[in-house]
Structure formats: structure tokens, C-alpha cells
Amino acid sequence: DQQVKQNSPSLSVQEGRISILNCDYTNSMFDYFLWYKKYPAEGPTFLISISSIKDKNEDGRFTVFLNKSAKHLSLHIVPSQPGDSAVYFCAARANRDDKIIFGKGTRLHILP
Amino acid sequence: NAGVTQTPKFQVLKTGQSMTLQCAQDMNHNSMYWYRQDPGMGLRLIYYSASEGTTDKGEVPNGYNVSRLNKREFSLRLESAAPSQTSVYFCASSEFNRNYEQYFGPGTRLTVT
Image 1 (cartoon, one colour):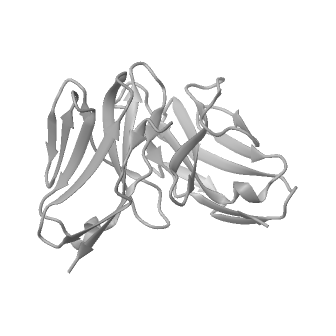
Image 2 (image 1 turned 180 degrees about the vertical axis):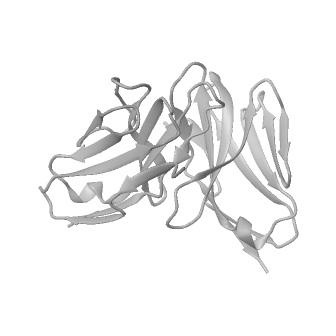
């Protein structure tokens, strides 16, 4: 059973607009959430994270929102740029665990 | 500072052949991981090593073995390759007490015919 779900396999957004990528989770023991970005033929790279004690974390154009009651988080990219076209993975870690669980990813296309 | 390196970048095997994927990190991280990425399946954990001398199974360990050779190196072995193991393999490392960020290598694209 998937513990981290990214229900949108792909998303297309006009350049300059806001991109919103969503992620749902089922395990209430998750206490830390991360977003990774992956370009073709490269390894994933860390983008932004949030602890379960916060509901928002911002880093430049990227903001992650966490709604614990809904077990939902989202990544906002404003404004979207062509270089943001990539696959985005949501990931989560359970308290005291050594590993993180990844979602299946969402492919973001930024349209000119 | 090379980060996480993986060899080889590409490999084609015949069914039943064996091979070892190599991974090394120069960030002095305690934890290392092996993932496979398949279309529509995301990143699935094969094995991980929380520290030198320890290894644990992940979500999809069948058909694989690992060795944590030292703190820097973590290898993944396929003893008898099968077409179902055709995938892109990523190695990653992290420092457990630092935000759990994992640093990934560039990947090995493996095809089993």
C-alpha cells in the first residue's frame, strides 16, 4: 500500500504562473517531508523540506505547505520558469527511521 | 568534492549473468541507500545501510545483495540477472542527524536481455 501518494502523474503550467504539486500521505508517524527534483539522466536533487512541527517553509520561489489534519502537502513554485520542467518527488520520513519513502513523482511541464 | 559517484553508467547483461554496481561517497555520511526507478513506480528502496557494518532490506530486496565495504563504499550485486531487473539504479547517502536529505548519484542504467 502506498504511503506517499502523488496522484497527478503530470502537470502543465504556463511560464510565469504558479505551479502547485500535491502529495498525500497515510502514515501518521511521518514527521519530516521532502521534495526532490529530477532531470532526465540525472539523479534526484533535494529541493525543499518541512518538519511536521511547521505548516509552511519557503525558499526563494519554492514554498511547501503542510496540512497535517488532512495528511496533505503541496509544493508551490512562483513564478514558474522553463528550468522547472522536471519530475518532482515527494518523500516522507517516519520518526527515528533511517529511510525515507518516495511517491511516484509528478512530471511538470512549463509551457512557453 | 565529487559527492556520490556510481559505476558503471550503463550496462547490458544477459539473463543469468551477474554483476556488481559500485557506489562511493566522499561526504563522510553514515547512511547509504540503493534505489531502483521504473516508469510510473517512482523510487523504490532496495537496500540501505544506516552505518558501516550494517545493512537492511528495503521495499524490493529480492534478487539483490549488498556490501557496505567501508564508510565510503556501498555495492549492489545481482547474482543472476533477470529481465525484471531492467531499471535505473540510484545510490544515495545521507547524514542521519542532518535533515534527512539524501544526496544521489547520477544513476546506472541496466538492461537485462
